Every structure is written in C-alpha cells, then in structure tokens.
Image 1 (cartoon, helix red, strand yellow):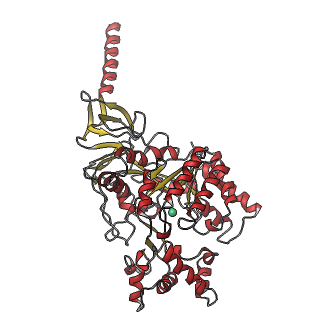
Image 2: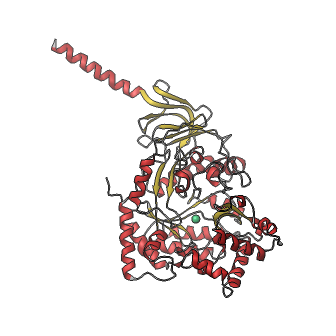
Image 3: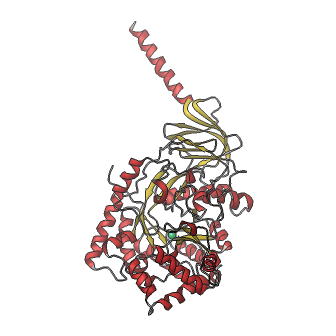
Length: 529
Ligand SMILES: [Zn+2]
C-alpha cells in the first residue's frame, strides 16, 4: 500500500515536471528572431513563463495558455529609450501609447540636467500611478545646482559643493542611473567642467554613467565633444553624448571630426558612446535663441535685460546670429512654435509667419522681436529645422550610436510637437533601414535594445535570451513606419503588432490593451533592496 502511494506520487511529480516543460504561459510562434546582439535573424519560437523568457527554439510540440502567431513578423527585444522627457505626459497618459506603439517598453527620464528630485519620492509616485512601460531616471546636475546655487553665473562654494555631493550620493542610492547634464541650459551653462567632474566621480563610484546634452552643438561642437571626453576621462565614468547632432548649415559635416574624436577616445580607453534621434529638426524652449548670459538669475532678470535699452540691442544681435548661423537654420521660417500655453493658436506657426501677422517683414531682426514678444507673453517650446541630414546618417552608422527619442509621452492632439515622440523608433526601422539601407535591421534592433541596456547597466533586459525579462516587440518589418510629421504630428506609428512588458501583452494586433505592467528599473547604486 505504502509502495503504491509512493509510486503514484513519483509518477505525479514526474508528470508535473514534464508538463511544466512543455506547457508555457505564452509562446510566440514562427517569428524571425532578431535577438538584439546584432546576429542575423533566425526562425524560432519564444516561450515565456510569468515575466521571463524561458526558452527559444523549435517549440512545435509544446503548448501554451496564450499563443501569438508571429509568422512573417520580426520578434525582437523591446526597445529602451535612453533619453526622454516622459514626465511630460506620463501622468496624463500612463498607457504611453506613443511609446508602446513603437515597441518602446522602457522610458528614461531626468535628461539634459533636469530631473525629478528627490528620486525616491519620484519613483513612489510613478509606482502609485501604474504605467505601461518600465521607468528609470538620471539625476540632473542642473536640478541639483538650482537647488543649491540657484541660477547665478558663479562657482559653487566649498560648502555648496559638499551639499551637492551629498545630494548626488542620495540620488544614486535611491536608484538613479547616473548623472545627466544640460550644459547648454541655465544653470548647466554656468557650471565649470571641474564641478561636473567632481559630481560625476560620485556617480561613477556607484556604477552610474554620465549622459550629456553638451554645452554647444553648433559652431563649438568639437570643443563640447572634447569637454565630454575629458569629463569621462577625469571622472573615470562611462559617458554618453546624447542626441548627438550638428546644428547650423555652416557647421554641417562636423560629425566627421566628432566621430573621429570618439574613436580616438575609445581607442585609449575612454568609454564614450552616443545616442541620437533620426530627424533634422530639434525641439526645445524658445529661449534657446537667447544668449545664456542674458538668462542669468531667472526669467524676471532675463525679461528686464530684454526690456532694458542698454542690453536689448546686444541680445537682439545675438538672437539674429542664432537665427542665421545656428539653431534658426538661416531663416526665421525654420523655427516653428510647438507648444504655447498662453496662446495655443501660435502652435504650428513659424517666426516668419508670426512676424507677418504682426505687420512686419519676415526678417531675422523682426523675428527677434517676435521672440522677445513670445518671452514676454510667457515663453513657448519651438521646433528648429537646422540639423545636417548627412550628419544624421553618419552618426547612425557609427557602432557606438544608440537610438533615443528626446521626446515626452504624446498627449494626443495637444499642440504641434516634434514628431519624434510618436515616430523615432519606427522611423529608424522604416525609413533608415528599409527605405534607405543606412543600417541593417539587426543593427537597428541592437541600437534600440541591448546596446542601451548595457549602457544603462540594465543587465536582464535588451536581449531575447532565456532568463531575461520578457519585454518583447513583434513587428512587420515591411510595414513599420512613423506616421507623425512636422505638419501633422499626432499620429501613432504603424506596423508594431504585439508588445509585451514583463511578460504581459500591452499591444495586441496593433492596439494598446490598457495593461500597465511597467516597473521601476533601479540604477546600479540602489540600496533600497
Ligand atoms: Zn537635450
């Protein structure tokens, strides 16, 4: 009797084991697997249990609770966006359709020197909200400096330096991915390189990285690349030149030199990498046209300088120069207002049109007056068409370049934003890979997944391999494309069929399911576990 029970039990255990091996929560069948390493695609099935990939291979004899037929489709690790401004939009749109419908399942905030702070409170807020994608942040050097030094153009005192170091430590221990700077923006623009190096050393101690919107991306681009390399070298920290580009027609072609500097730095052991968005226009505040010295001390002081007869003409000359040789791309009609809370009608109009509406000729001088009026009214965000297209191609082909959007979460129908938030990843796959052959599909997937995961120290995502989290994008390589244009930006990308986040289907047949399985991805120094 005892023996019978025992053998029955053994048989049951054996049966349960073999059952577990052949039945999975989900199988994605018959797809072309592009695993994120850059290896050429191969045909295979992908099995998932709970939130992890458990097997890849011929699983035709296995069964699953849920089967996704990927015949004719690419199955890839879902995409990781290393540079977003997703704090804008995520609380309105926690489903983040603009990202998910491109296969992006991890959003990184806190770029350009500006981040939420403190980091632990921010992470709790996102967790309470519940969102579809995974989420992580850098700590912003500009944010820390604003809290300690303000927006004055001066060095930090030793006491202030110590406070900033402590804040940096706290941020890393609370799970920041590293330190971001926006040395182009106030107060980053007032920060000496040595101060950035000091704080970056702390991020490095915790295994973090340095990601930078550099001091200048037009005539002084090469100086800025050298500064970025120096920070990496002296702080002993991996660095990423974010949204690398060349602004201003006169400077186009400078990526030949910038990429050479990257290669030389890498050759001598500086771990420098790049990310970029695939467009020839940028988007930032209208104050990008105002010289930084005129922005010192904040908005009121800037307005006082614009309104003062003593400084007004000097500022105006510099705005005109920026329209002619820098971000304005040589003509006021290249600068479009994208978002303007106090005069929403302005969205979509360019500075030439706004000058004409004000009864003036569309000259750079009159456009400068329009800029002053916009700042007096309360400011605006603008799109600047001034990035060299050949530089975009060249930067994309560099092996150290990853893809990032620099965009917020799309709030459908609001304003006339840069289309990158809806289109970046689909545009690389559709326009740069399929239509123009600038890079291969396998390279593109790698630049959107494993390369960024490695860079951000996310060690269990970004590849299709057993044991890794099941963040997976299934798309039609013949169909995927961005639909959002500068004229008509509020359009989701097409061609993304299924997207899984932590094993849950968030996009099904090209539609968002409403699920919100996104998690916080804590940085390498996190001590909260
Ligand atoms: Zn930026």
